Image (tube, rainbow, N blue to C red):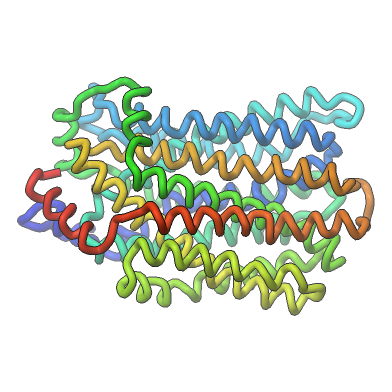
Length: 460
């Protein structure tokens, strides 16, 4: 339930259960991405034996559509429609597309029964079609994030929601990683579908439980009629014209590249560096267990240093936490490295919503209206270019190092390629982005106080 305030939404406080429900809707996002990030490339390259060039191209097509449809759906959800006053701008998209999002990830792991080495086109086309449908639904569910700045106005409410969101997001990732890893048996293709099918159950249940909390409040629906319609290209150009939006875009792209490379490397690292196919589960448990433990620490740190400082600290900590993976060769060492990485990763996950809200608050003052959908879409658009770097980097490095998908062991140069893709290549990208972010982003605590006072004066 919500605790109403006489002053409207600016000082409204929400119950803990409401915050939990709000984030449960998005449980399926890391849940589906968890199995995709760790199993997709491996499954199609190593199990289905689809030539790596087709795996890479399919991934790039999917991510390009992902990039295009994010700002497009964000823009469409910003525009008032005849049903917006009754149902809200975002809620219909979220409610309609949630279950298809969960189901399509399951369907990804039952490709056409054909020899992909001899006739790759049917498998390639199937993968592209399923991924495009899945990504469209994924983007619609992601509109929940666009509700965050307008629903939760104060730092305390945003901090509370971000802390709960980090917990649920990590649980989603944990389910997305562990359920398939506990069920999948390398070499047993049907076991991948079984893992994806079982994962679909909690994804759908959490979505249905959380759905009531993403309905837009009466005040939010009443503001819709005052929103001026603008063209998609005009809205897109306006969003990226802002300095702080561009700084956040850069750092988020780097974070996405880093995270995608790490997740996609887990199977390769366990099988060909640790030479222990069962090592992936302990490393994942240590990684996400540490992420959950880190929540109180990062919430407290956030209150002390603010969003800008915490964002920079988070990237630096994340990058340096990769160093142990360059040297570990045992399961114990990898689990310890995973714990360190997970603890530092907690800061990246925690700060995502609060700093996004800061950028949207400033943009609202500049624009004179709320357009969370287009800003969420624009940021997600560039996020996907960060993720696109993963299959591109993997394809290039695997070709250069002559990685053999049918071999049980790899050459030393191929092993170095696996380590590089998990550590210093994405780490260097993130480090450069962090330096540029620190030099360009200027939303300090003092400036944000002034912005929020203006928002109250303008009743935005």
